[in-house]
Image (cartoon, rainbow, N blue to C red):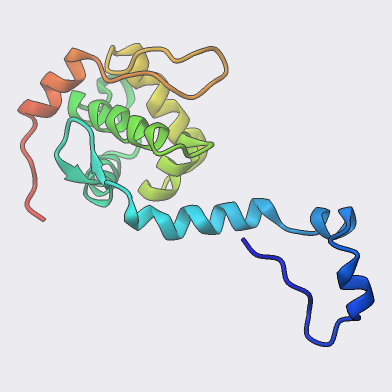
Length: 155
């Protein structure tokens, strides 16, 4: 990032350097978000354990969720939670500050639903626990088994 004086600025003031007020006025949060969005396409977009790009995995999760929006007692298939766990790990590995929010956005669901999916993926043994109050964890061998056996859809 480069900070330059506006055209026609007073040379005496610019010679004094940058002030703390100017530094505080830089919207670092917005710049960081914009940088992440533009650099997202430069990342390795293959979700671990699936061999598929992020958008394909998110589409598979959305399709399963849309087939039965309220599964009740029967629940969702193992493949669903293994895919959720893999997408969560991809978001953590790519340093998104809120990986659950990223899942919600990419799958077109609410944050609450995505958080529940991640919680159930952990409970079913597809995702290990992260550090307390920090996003994280790893795919379990069970998740990798389910993902390896899950039929892949053509792009």
